[in-house]
Length: 106
Image (cartoon, rainbow, N blue to C red; front, side, top):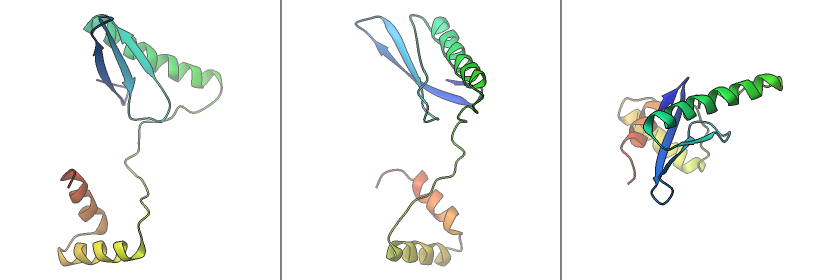
């Protein structure tokens, strides 16, 4: 589910007969629940809107969904090896690493 750039995952708790959801592309905790798909969707949107209003009331910027940038620290030898392989393949380091990440787990 996506709303205003915030993405959520949902699980069904069979014992309760309730769907529980959580926004996954921000470090802040935003949760919601509903007993039907319609209720769940509305609760998701309400939770995101409440979060944005709460931040505004405190004069704080809400945490935006992840930007797509992150820093990874590796030993210098690993950095040298992946840079050399990227160059051998005629790719930038970023393109090479992105390709490897998209391949999934080893």
